[in-house]
Image 1 (cartoon, rainbow, N blue to C red):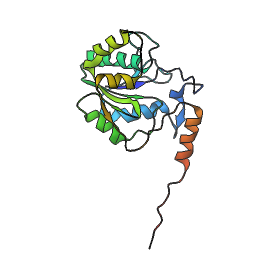
Image 2: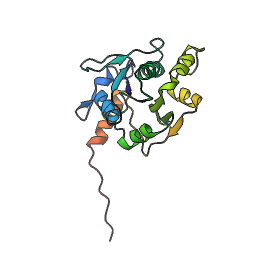
Image 3: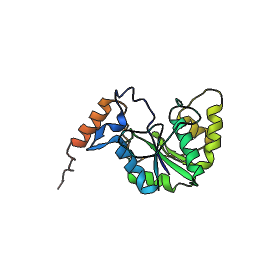
Image 4: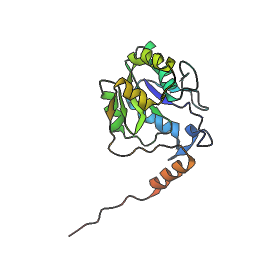
Length: 188
């Protein structure tokens, strides 16, 4: 199962960044497209998004826990449906190379991308362990800290992955995409 984390408040972005556009598609469309070749179903974690007829799962055990709450809800739903693992991404992670997602999908254990921990593969048998972690005393609720704590494998991308947190980030990405590719100089 694929899980796109969309539960954030987009406070730095100023509007719903899942619906912001890049290359004529919403950021959410890009996220769904990055997972779709590798999963049977894509589900949204955190909230429904206007204009999308995709199932959404609530954060677990309660709202407001950030991406880990969305991951926890998704792991439980996936496990209950018989899936052995969940591939995750976030709506603000764009231009994800298909080969990188393929590496995650084929990985035999929990694994995450070092520079973008929301891009990951999580076995569904971690659902109860994540529940226990989230019920424990407050601590670091980041996905990276959770991944390190369970000994998840680290996958390193071949190139940096753009992450969109502000309108300026999106504008920078669009400027980069609009630049013509450099042609290497020929030497004689």
